[in-house]
Amino acid sequence: MKLSVISPTYNESENVGLLIARLETVLEGADYEILISDGDSPDRTWARVEEIGRRNPRVRVLRRTSKPGLGPSVVDGFSAATGEALVCIDADLQHDAGVLPRMLEELRNGSILVVATRYMPGGGTTNWGPIRRLGCWGCTKLAQWLLGVKLRDPMSGYFMMRRADFLKVRSRLNVQGFKILLEIAAHLQPGRISEVPYTFGPRVHGQSKLSKKIVFAYLAQLWRLSFRERLAPHNFRKLSLHGSDRPGH
Image (tube, rainbow, N blue to C red; front, side, top):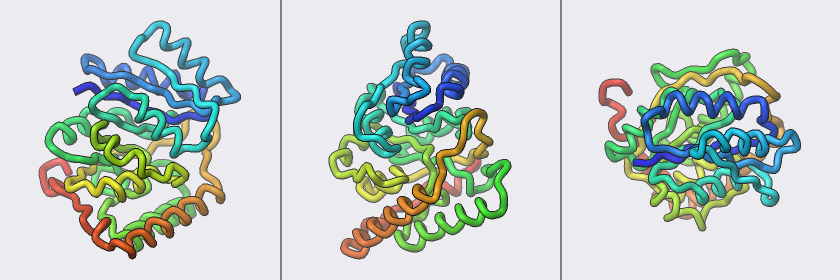
């Protein structure tokens, strides 16, 4: 199963080379491609990826000059990918690439959606203050309460699915939503979801893009999806975790 690793970027020129090097090590011997979906970064992240791609043909860049934002970047990257399996991973090195083989194994074993989570045994966060921990806990609980979603980490930006399943819902996704995972889960209604623990690490270079504007966008997304759920309440209730009682979960 060929894996397409999609990373949405904006001003990540200092990190993207480190990410690609890490992915090359983790995925050595596997059939894969690395696609950097870049929002025409002023720091020329796209040019750095082009340079790397000249020595490794598995690496390519999608330089996006319209539809700014995280959601459109992920959807455009998934659309341009060629692999049977698709995974979204951040370029700031906070997502642990080392869990990719296990995520791919879960997909091969029949999971429809595989989510890397911080909030289960074996997962965690580093260098987070109490305010950020409380804020993320609150946002997570809101998603679980308003939407009835059983995901332990519904705010995760690190997830894997089959390209065929993505294509089923692509035209229905609201790409302005801050967390594209919630959009995909809402429309795909996967019958089997697996969660794989990982530790959310510190950003290596650059500054976090988390802001009050992003938090408000997330809350607006929750409200919109909650309204949809009230109109068709079975949508999210059908989401369930399968295999979480197997060893290693």
